[in-house]
Length: 222
Length: 205
Image (cartoon, rainbow over all chains, first blue to last red; front, side, top):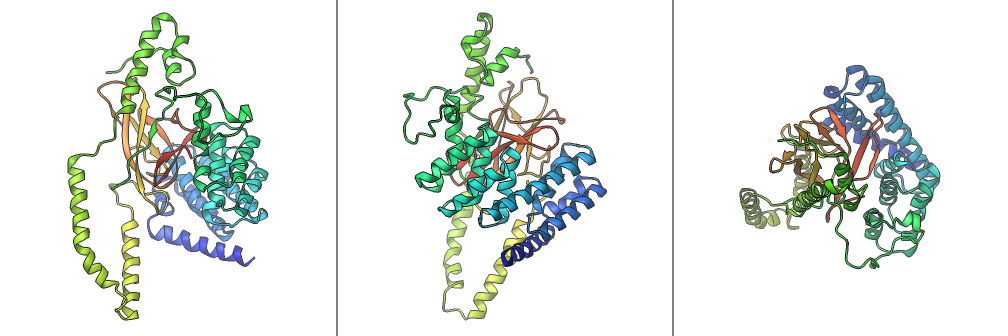
């Protein structure tokens, strides 16, 4: 209870700081019609009072405005995010995981990618080990976004965490899954899980350049 | 210059079919398209000499200031002076984090920025940009440049660490996800691509 109150107070404080610094809350006025902006602000206040992060709501509204979505569609999308944030927070709470804005956002992302609240709870229990819930949930969401079925997402994430490797192993999971899938051996079909440090294909086959990514690993920002 | 591309060649570039699946009369075109993208993919990200010089100037200037800075935070200072320094630093950080109208505002806090190159093959497009949570979905903020007059468009952007969603905007109105990246429902009937940026670079997460 005390934790919830503290998170709620922190959320309200952060949302006010975001407005003061010209964050998404301040930007929304220029990007969506005034009635939509007002409705989103009301939802954001409600979110902050519940200890939910408000920025994802403003971000979604701004995205809708940029995509020239109809006002009712923008509001529906923002409400959907609001609902996902609430479900994610509840899932974390029932899994006895640490509830942070980042973990809630990660949970909402995983839900949007196709996972259920039960999946979230199973993954969030990873925190009992040394894996932050936010990282585990973002990994799970990314796996679902790649196309891994939800039950296999949980199994893959569980597999890495059971081995007890470093967090980096967990973070690299989506990339490894995508690489194996590109080689025609999706681990969620073979049921063999991810094989670290081995490649029985021999030297890497050249990949389809379009598949090699329209985003690229870059150099560190100076 | 724009050129029409056969639907099967597009499917080849999307990885849906192999080169051997193309009819014989299309295999040369398909091979050439793969080769073009392959060459582009291997092109290194290079920084301009002017940027490098500017960075080095700032690094040297920082190094020259360091002795004074060390003196400023040395423990011989009275407690009130340390508190004043912390307060001044907090103000400075807040003012630096205020978004500039000429640069995309960071979507997430903290961490390093990493250069990420966005590439799209769109031979029929007249203009392409990338919009996402890192530039507040502004379709004008990050235009891609057409490479060598061909169908490959590219831009390299510094992204703050964190997870980002984005989409390409073709001809100012068509929002399309990155065919090479994972995607999620955007809530508006389309899909957003997902990229994660960490200290070691961009990755699928």
